[in-house]
Length: 428
Image (tube, rainbow, N blue to C red; front, side):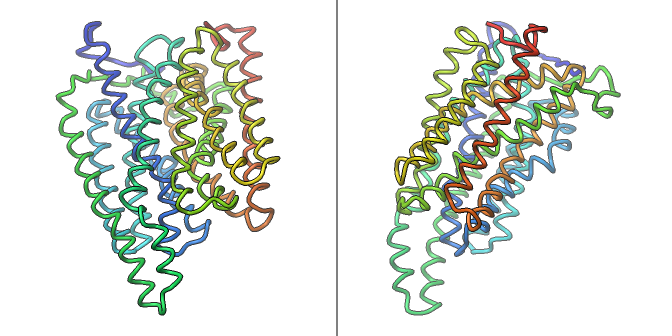
């Protein structure tokens, strides 16, 4: 079993690690939720279609698939505190590469920078999520992660707005200039100016990440180390079937979250929303998620068991998808944004639940859960590929309804298992 060893922590300082973790989740949110407006940005700056633009989240989230086990190994050897510092340095490097390559309008280099950024974020995820999960009793894990989620989504609301104001404030004029460009040289000059606007904000973000890394050692974060008491378990992969299925469900859920948060801009434009308005739609989804976190932290587990709340969230998601299917234009887009309300508590419930049912395979489960975040790479690409085949709305809603059905089926399975084993069921 994976246990944790903590040094330098007492009750008087118990809130300090949580505060530091909340700050790190704020950083994760700021970096992650820039993908939404970035999809719109690269479509214009590089003249891409949906498939090419959705390479942004694909490269970003594929890093979770490739880097999860190496990151877990580093976290295990270095300890969580030093792992976090290294993660922030890697993220700073990826941020800098991305900004410079976009400014030079070299798309492969920009995607490489996003992959490096995703690698650093993978290392950060394998440290902060287990840390928050283990920081108290299992009954309160969903609430603690939901609290971290509030910091994440507040940052996610702010980040697209800041990006849109600093980088895409004149996107309407850019489109007008492109339409009026007399030749290829004029068009390239307009796009070069537009793309270069991203360089300075990303340089500032890289410097900020380095400063946070330097200051982290003075934040009073205790030295927590994962200790594997059975070396055979990580290699054997002997986990209950419920844990393996739960990891697959997390893969599907992350795709759902990215669809509602990042792909909403493309969906909104397909529903007739202007380019200038579509750049803010990610913030709208994250605002709904923030409301969902606020409701979830009150209700789980005090008023409603975690698994039952997960089931009700999937039902809400399906209802909103059906409503979006029936409604035209802006109404349909608003229903998609409200999916954030349904999605909010799914990860805070699923992550600790899978760790709980993993038994002696928690080390392996943690790495696989982070790998499952790569679901955000594949589902948007599936959506982009289906658009020319079946249309914008049927492809979006078909994917989402199927995904919510699978998540709801897992919740039903876990609720039934909880009736015979209270440790797996709804506890209040």
